[in-house]
Image 1 (cartoon, one colour):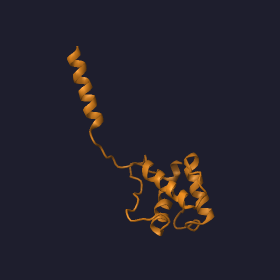
Image 2 (cartoon, one colour):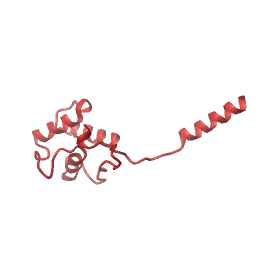
Image 3 (cartoon, one colour):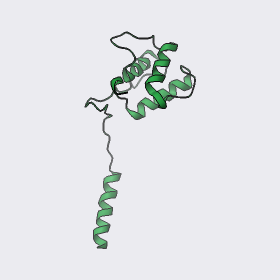
Image 4 (cartoon, one colour):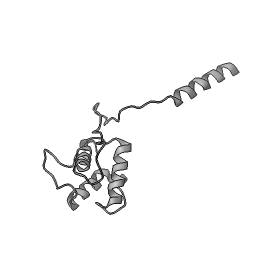
Length: 111
């Protein structure tokens, strides 16, 4: 019985410790937009990525990136997870960036 328990625990431990890097999924079978590697916070590429990730603009129509209206739209899309820092501030941008990179965002229709 001890051998069986030890073998089971060893198998469980090996499985739990094995590396896995699944692609972030939006729940629809397609991965969420990946963050551009060279996008600095507040850059046009960063704003585009956040916009696509949260579905702020539709068909190119929406508030200007970085405007108070756009920042509020990001806050609404993030809901309870929205950063507490002043929308648009460097701290807010950093928190939005970290949140989207860690959670893998779902399309706006699912929010």
